[in-house]
Amino acid sequence: MGNNIQLLSALLISLPLVLAFGFLLGHWFRVYRERDKKTTLTLLSAVFDHTHDGVTITDKTGNIIAVNRTFTQVTGYSEAEVIGENPRLLSSGCHDAEFYKNYWQALIDTGIWQGEIWNRRKDGEVYLEWLTCKAVKNNNNEITHFVAVFSDITEHRRQEARLEHATEHDRLTGLPNTASILRELTKSLPNLQRQWCVLLLDIDNFRLVNSSYGFAVGDQLLNNIAKRLQGCCTKGLIARHSADVFIIAAPLASNSDDERLALINSLRSCIVKPFSILGRLMEFSFSVGATTWDNANLAINTVLQEAELALHASKSRGAGQTRFYSEDLRADKNPLAYLQGLREALGNNELALFYQPLVTAATGKIHALEVLLRWTHPVMGNIPPDHFIPLAERHGLMESLGHWILQQALQQYASWQKSGIAPPHIAVNVSPVEFQSENFVANVMAALKKHQVKPSSLELELTEGVFVQQDPSTLEKLEALSKHGINLAIDDFGTGYSSLAYLKHLPVNQLKLDRAFIQGLPENEADRAIVESTLALCRGLKMSVVAEGVENKEQADYLNRKGCDYIQGFFYGRPVDKDQTSQLLIKQKNAIT
Image (cartoon, rainbow, N blue to C red; front, top):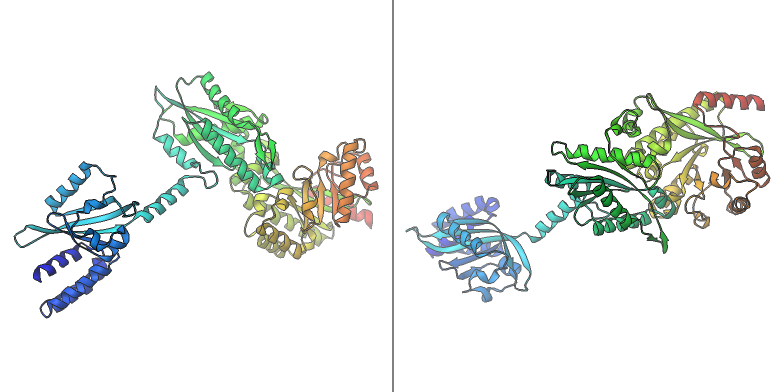
């Protein structure tokens, strides 16, 4: 019995759970050692059989003489099947002879081995375990037994792998993310034999895909592009950089212009083929910005910045262009150098709101003022919104920028109300990115309350993409805004989904007909048909219509005759600052009185 107690004591020394139960077991052992060795053995045996770790005991020749319940649960072998067998029956085949030689040598030399080992269950499944094996010696320092304690860590390792993959890869496309590809590139510094062409590929007008067909279709397109890039760039590295921008890094043999152009042309030929979207074949163009990494002393982050500068320069030329980096892109005249300062523009008072009137077609009186954002840079001057708004959306600035716009607009509107010159409504554009914010409705209501503006005085103009996205979250927000009395308008109607079918179940008050259908009026027959049909349908849906881009009296008169509710355009007024707008409102009030 004394040998059995010595063996089980050695077993317990090697168990990881001794940290939790050590004090208690030690107390038991001291109390009962002298009183009742049989009781002690019973208690230790219970611990042996009920621990969550698997336990194997072998004799000095390595044959199994005992296993616990967890062993049978993990391996699938019963106790009867393994008693007298060698533990090699669990061998997975994943380790070579050298591994087991070192394993046994450590046991003989130090009396213990600890580490990860792959074994195989009875059903053939290979699993990973954390194993601690200890040699048990008698009073003569001779090995009498081996005790192995193990934990199945297969699922734990899988979770680690999934977490690592999630942090290193884009969730949508499965491609590596920017941080991952930059780390990979830093392992392959350029040298005389190999340089890298690093390029950014941007989908032109990708926002129209989301706004016209919904984000699910946009996601499908991104996945298709990712797969094509992987198929045609097998020797390079590919990552998703941002919403619609991909990074491609490919090795160069000669660093010649011809080789770089050949690389880009091969990529273009691969991805310009039509994509199937909602059962229709559609083609897209791509802008490319590229640079060469041929200097190991140049940080990869700097190389990426060069590619970004080149991409912006290519997009400024128009869709489908390619631009290679050159030092002149870092000059002060480069627009991106200013656009990257968008975060500081608010604090520097570079942003301002302008206002353009929407007039009642029948009377010419101002019905609402549309709020338009302007950026006046101290060096560059006026920067068009279509340059910096996409940048704000891409880099996560749109929510804070939209919040600032709403606060400033309501503050100014409240001031006009106090002066008795405010029009019935103030209209604020909302970016789809901003609308997706979880707290969007709460933020709008808080702003109205802060500035004491009635919800019915506020019009929110959203693009068609927001309304087409009839997911529960979108519908809940639209319904909540409408129930609070806020007016909802569809902006730029006709440039995207172009259907009224989805409107009958949505709380939409107003539709803004895009200027593209107004420019040809009243002469263009197709424009007349579109405008008149839209007006008739909107009357049936009890929606008002705003015609955008009205530039002359003939257009205004035609729209008034056909029953258009409101008109907006240069014919009635260009966007102007708050002071000029105040003068316009005062002039209208005096004319009425």
